[in-house]
Image 1 (cartoon, rainbow, N blue to C red):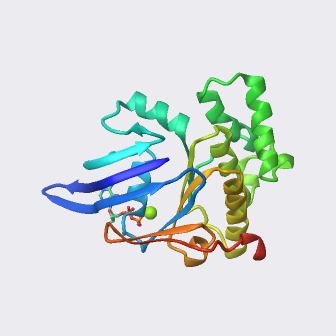
Image 2 (cartoon, helix red, strand yellow):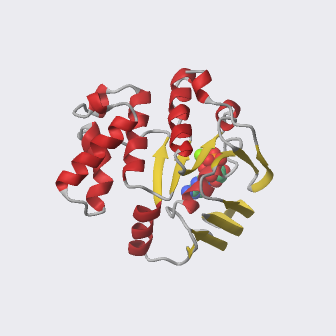
Image 3 (cartoon, rainbow, N blue to C red):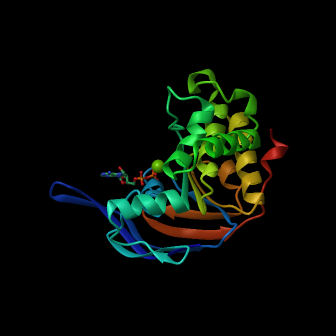
Length: 233
Ligand code: ADP
Ligand code: MG
């Protein structure tokens, strides 16, 4: 599903340059649930942003579902992003003046899905994250965990090939974090490919594989016995 070869990325700042990704190699198969772990500043978000086509690499190869991702126009990148990828962020990134239902329906609008089908699909995905009763509520009326579940429903409603989550539990307390991971595990049980960036060990162990980044290189990449979040919720 994802193939990455010798990926490099530097940030230029004036005459200085910060080499953040120093030759990343890894593949992700369909149906995997991968944690990208590493301390703050190790390059996790940089890597995820490149995988998500939100930023470009300086060199190296990236294939997403067999498609080479390189030198894409803004328009093409946006098309691929909408078609292939779902995003979940630490800060939820919901639109404050739109209801939970409208937030979930928004990516479908960009996919030019008709109004009626948008509503039906969005409600169905809200139901799948256990928030059907909250459809008409604004984000400000929801708890942190509920907001993240809306964000997950929004990401999944567009039926992406890969779900990319950057510290999805970073703004949540432990119990709520485990509830969100329980949902992520269930979505993965359905066969969806998911990458979760985290610096928390317990969260990483709820995935099926841990890729450990340190100073811009992968220092460890291991399949693990998945801890079910359900045991903690
Ligand atoms: P992580 O997500 O693991 O905390 P990041 O990928 O966000 O790490 O950042 C890696 C390094 O790159 C950090 O030193 C950070 O300060 C730097 N960095 C991140 N984004 C930028 C940017 N847009 N411009 C300059 N430096 C950046
Ligand atoms: Mg980060």
